[in-house]
Length: 91
Image (cartoon, rainbow, N blue to C red):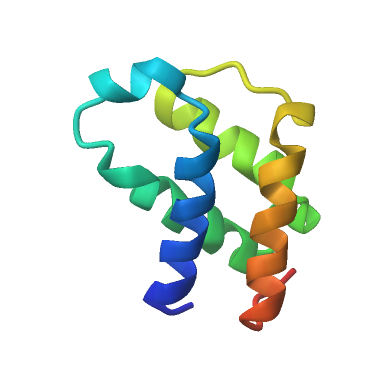
């Protein structure tokens, strides 16, 4: 994937901002760029049958110690899926 895809996925995460007010206290958050990269790379590898909502949930929960549910992640996962399909991703 190219940098444009990572940037678009990071933009989805920033708009959603699952950390809420905690985002101001996370060192090196860097606009969710690392998490966006992790999500895209995990989708590319085909883990979880490319169920993007599960990938989003797991990446963010592991990265930040959150307790997001799969249901919490459905909206952003749909946006991410759309980006990956548009850019020729593996979804």
